[in-house]
Amino acid sequence: MIRPATEADLPAVCSYWNPLIRDTIVTFSSEERTPAGLAATIAERRAKGWDFWVAEAEPGTGTGSGPTILGHVTYAQFRAGNGYARAMEHTVILGPGARGRGLGRAMMAVLEDHARAAGVHAMIGGVSAENAAGRAFHAAIGYGEVARVPQVGHKFGRWHDLLLMQKIL
Image (cartoon, rainbow, N blue to C red; front, side, top):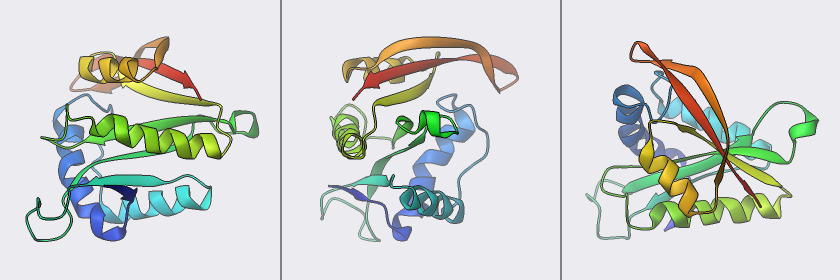
């Protein structure tokens, strides 16, 4: 089930997102997420008409200690200023074991439908050039590479390229 995130979901989101932040270049950031920080991000996005959705495992398939969150999607304005008000950048993150099951596609469909209804014209994904799975995923759902920005991310003692992939909604 894909639904808007609640505060109760945020520890689970941090549990699968922080290892990706800490151990991979899926994101160039090295700042781990906290439930309080995510709550503030979600509140800010919702105040602007955007949202933050989670994919929850079907009842009976979790650990019994609350919802089993498998991944999340969200979006926000691509760049500041009213000239970019219809261009958004998304984030899609899946936890371990959730990849390759169509969940990412389903979550992106929810996000794109919401954005389209809000008048968004372009959706952009910033993908590490070294993230072959992320590039392939975006290409499979209709995103094309529109720019390669060399050496803008620095992590693990070296520079990384960023690919901007775009879909016109």
